[in-house]
Length: 413
Figure 1 (cartoon, helix red, strand yellow):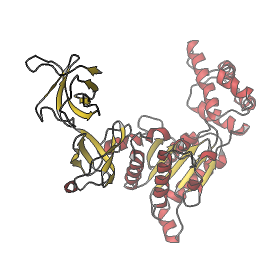
Figure 2 (tube, one colour):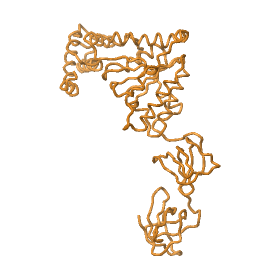
Figure 3 (cartoon, one colour):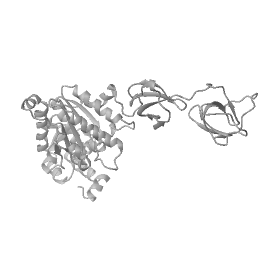
Figure 4 (cartoon, one colour):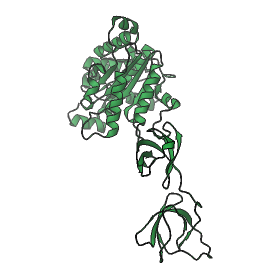
């Protein structure tokens, strides 16, 4: 806003206090930082004897000079990112700011310090030697527990809970028996442990489900990390969360860290990659390379876009094993339908073999959707068990879904 000249000293002026931030070259116009974060451009009919840092009271009708120190600049808080000879680079809730004022030597500023600062004096106080920030994804101990997956109240899983994919299940069993249950033998042999395993394949093929089974069968503490959930708008938070997560896992007798949708945080680095992505990939590489031979932590990741993963993560010594989850074969589809049938109440002979034959190109998740539809049909008919006609109608319903139709038209099915 722009306001008029100074009111007569004897008049009563009700307005907002502020601090002069700049006086224009004409000597009659100046800029004010107002209490509460606003700003004003103030015009005067006469030359003003004001300078940067002076206190003024501003209203819609005029302004009035206040005694020095009547109102100080609002104190803000930020985290030091870099210290220069003539300024400090701070991370604030509004982004990165450069405070162009020589930092005081007595403060001993260092990157990572949480500090108070104001526009007039620059950095004035160190609040904490480490970052203290509001964040979308925190790195405090109580927040880390949010990543810990608990199966309490859910059915106990075993490899029998995973239908089909015989070769995939066999490879997963090897992971448990050799990497988690026979660490001592591997250490005595002198062999390098498998640090990471990456599950690849189309969506809905059971990658996350198998990871949960591995955790329960091995009795390992299971940390479930959705890729996007770990990304923070605060510089350094994502890397710090990863460091704390790996450190917490290392304190467990055995642990599995599972990254779902890892392609969202570990995409291939290039000239057009943002800084956050590059830092997260670099941190993952450091953590994987830091595993000791006797490590009790296995990292599992899942992606349906293996081609997008940074190639450095796929080198030997990092994600050593790749287990591919292709779309299920007809035998796999039959076994997936059978496994799900065990947990449901059914009546009569169900057309599982016929449905397995008809569902070429379907994922495990799509097959499970048939059971959901069949249960809805039976319940809506006031029956307490699924019959063969429910399965037939459920198959037709899932086939006619818009998403399914689009996939079929695109040649995905």
